[in-house]
Length: 406
Ligand code: IPM
Ligand code: MG
Figure 1: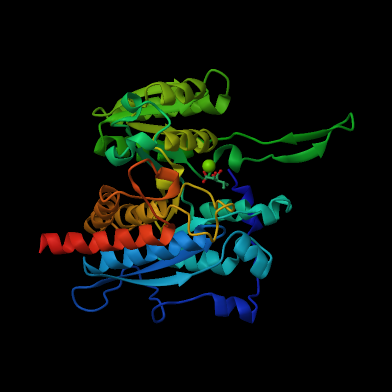
Figure 2: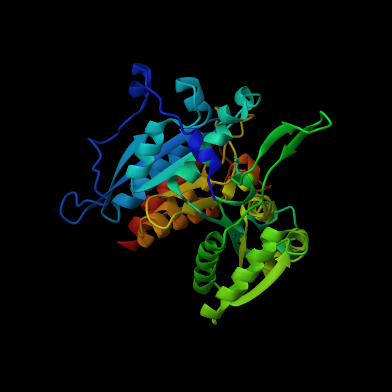
């Protein structure tokens, strides 16, 4: 099936100002994946896409944490910042410049902040920041989107659910990311024979698209608690009937994973009724979009949740699942933890650097254990801090774990 939006990637000639704005913090990046740097060091090229709203604030913090945790594990990073979303629209008139796609493709992993804002809301669809993000996902072929939702003991009171319902929730939504109704054709707005406007989209999945996301989900469940729930709307949608059939057939290859199926309306209800029943959830693009927002709220704040988008080969895309929050942009109020945890996912799933990833995860817990909270996760008795201070506390925590382990 054609990824219709991908064809919208337009070549742009960068004006001089663009070049000046694309920063390289280290010497020319290598074009070889993980080339050896100095002896005992591994070097990785990371494309940073700060984007819009709170994106630049949270990315600059996550970059420092990534660098720090990596250096303690003998990793060297070379960062290249590129524009995407509204920032790219303002700079060169398209939400995803070709140069950004090329840089992303040539790097080892991509870390994205957030895109979108009021300023571009009324733009035509092909000139919306969101279109740039969809083009990027299609361009990198990152079909598997992992969105964990874990209720940390430190934050259980930040959940809107009762303590006994929220406590101990630890689930992973595996969302198909480059197919379904988001990309399906035909699509559009046309005038019908009665002269009335009609908007339409197509929910379409080819067997291979279902199989490959299902395999990622079975593998994910296997490494977790061995339970996989496939969410669809097979009582109504043909695409879901095929989805259920393919997932069921694949289950034979994963006898150690317990597979169940659930209709999406029921899943939405079960997620707030008894979220602990879920381990791994696999679902299509649009259901995954909706259910992962819902799952995030169980944890207390969407500001806590990272994501990883992976392809068969090639760099992964790592981003917080929250948006650009234009209402608090530039006010030092954003929660940087989702982006910091996305950097941890980048290390773990993108580069296979589990030790460095663990350093970041531990450092986040360390800062929370000391009582530091941004506004979105604040509760009485904790210490309210801004975005920068939270970042500094995580950095300190990366360091203190080193001292503790020497
Ligand atoms: C997400 C977002 C995006 C999506 C938007 C910004 C295009 O909601 O990553 O969940 O719908 O996938
Ligand atoms: Mg969403």
